[in-house]
Image 1: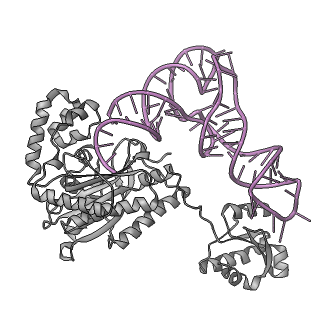
Image 2: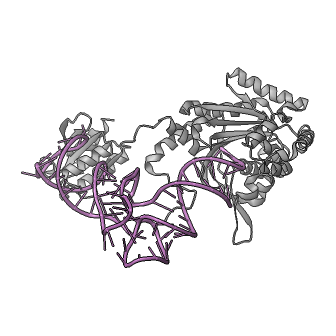
Image 3: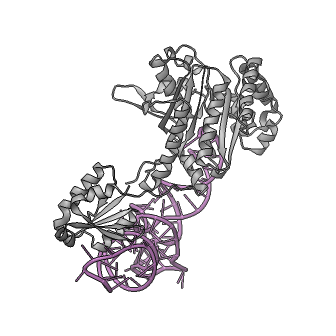
Length: 416
RNA sequence: GUGGAUGUAGCUCAGCCGGUAGAGCUCCGGAUUGUGGAUCCGGCGGUCGCGGGUUCAAGUCCCGUCAUCCACCCCA
């Protein structure tokens, strides 16, 4: 038996680094006044169809959709924003002080071919600020991610920035782009000719060199913003300059969801190979309304836990191996009850403690204490029971002393 | 969904021109009657991914299939 394709087990050895990433992220969210939210693993399929958009690959071919026994069409969530917005609308959060600032750690599901840094189930850390159109919030999002990567030590991080415009400037731009693409015609690759029909902006994703050079002359949305979008974009850039956050304006930056408006951004890590995008997001001023709420502007981001971990590992970053406080060696069957009592008492005092359950010899138990990275080994055997004093060994120095069994736990607790 | 590479012990791998499977690490034990991190010795551990085919004989050759990895598509 094996786990399903594209899934993985997080084994104990891999937990420390993941937990470090999560802890740092949670602290950043907390200090920026974001509150934790959890949403269900699955939602009505309709939520993603309306939210993410029917022209996106995710909706067209990557959703884990199924019918439940009640005949409802449900989908394991492929992204985190639409569910949070659904919760915002459902719980009437528009009545709370705005903006409502939320963060999440959730599993995402996409039916894709697995690859380095890409799984069918993965974790994303994300944040959403709903109820304000202020460019300062876009900058806050970008800077929270920047801070996360910096504190963790993610190497070679680059930021790309663009704008998707709004309902006023995007439609006329798309007409211009379509005209341009028709002018280029058959010279584009077959994929791009498909994209031109379905979602013209996607042609900028193409890696075909011929297409890239043909599109070099194409009009870019970021160069054709309406005055209000231009002002908003300039404000975001102003904040990034204020924070000395380097970035590159990239008119070819196209994100995978249809709901973006105005600001979009993406962080990449050059160490990661093909799947180098480690986090990204942007503004989605129409999504709340499209999902059925009172219109409310919003902005947010998502970042991939696995890709951050891969990037950290590529830089050789590994957290200190965990250890325990005390390992108690049982060297006589008659000592077992006293050992179990000591274990229970120590743990009650908040001291991590373990013992031998494998019937190992003295040497084997000492070895186990060493493997567990124990600070102290406590020996209880025939001699100790007879003398009424346990042997306490400092695993760092190798020094040993006798400690009365009567006050053993108290004595040990004073050492931490 | 497309292309390429790879599947042998828990892990990393060797296995020649086809002749009935090996090493290192880990684990357990011994050298050291009850003392770790070093060394030496021994032991446990394998449906050779799975299914067919060729052959007297297949880990080895052929076909299929599944899985993993890498790339495309796309994305975190």
